[in-house]
Image 1 (cartoon, rainbow, N blue to C red):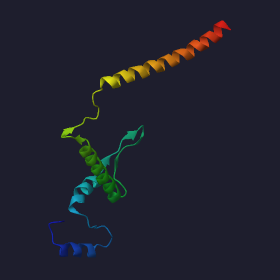
Image 2: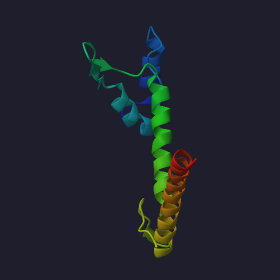
Image 3: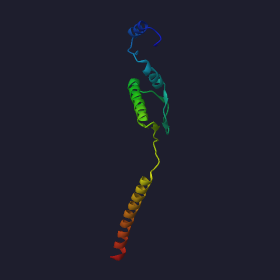
Image 4: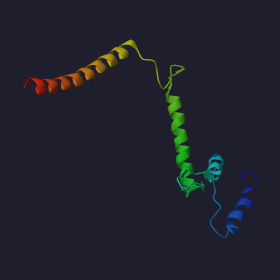
Length: 124
C-alpha cells in the first residue's frame, strides 16, 4: 500500500477493528510477502504434511534479513586482492605432505596398539 498517501494509510490503520495493519519499510515488504505464503510441510509416515506459516512473521523476517546480510558480508569477505577465493582452495605441496605424514602417523599408532596386544597374547 505504499502507492497510497499516508493519510489514506493512517485512516486504514485507525479504522481497523483488530490490530492487523502494521507499518513496514518497503525493503521489508518483499520478505514479508514471501514469508506469509503457506510453505509445504513434509509429512512423515501417516501423520504430518500439509501447509504451515510462521507464527510471528515479523520475527522470521528479521532473522531472514539478518541471515541475508551475513551471507552478503561473507561474500564480500571472500574478495581478496581483486579475486574471489573459492570455498575449497587447492592444496599446496606442503599441506599435502603434512596430511600424508599425519595419516601415516595415525596408522602407525593403530598398528602399534594392535601389535602390542598381539605380542602380549602370544608371547606371554
